[in-house]
Image 1 (cartoon, rainbow, N blue to C red):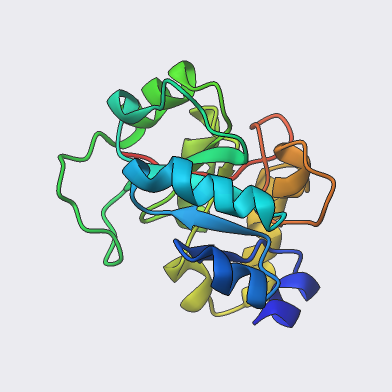
Image 2: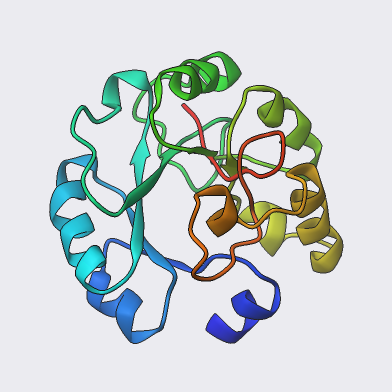
Length: 182
């Protein structure tokens, strides 16, 4: 998996497990429970990894951003088979509110497809993350290219100001992006 993500210049994140992320040479750790972000981020910094944290809306933005936290992932932007919708979906309006109030880059997730990229870019996200868009792609290279082209070809690490290694789902809509909404 690591070799494939490097070859495609796509970030490789492990959910919630710093030791596993370090063992498989991942780029970072995705924290699914915002209440654990300080603890996980501290361990990730020691391991030389960055973190992103999942939130559902602007009320979940952190007042104290821990060291190593590089982005917010807002989800779900659209209905998705992979996202449990425990809170009402605010879709693009909710995503915009998070972007406008965040001090960190915002990545949109949940139901993201190539056809929906332009809509989320207009909301000001720094990136987009997807599962089905890639897993179900008839042409994986074309799908990766569409995501990269949408965000100006900038890698996520570049979008996040990290020169360490590249992610291929970039930042700020003027040149890179990765994200998720609720």
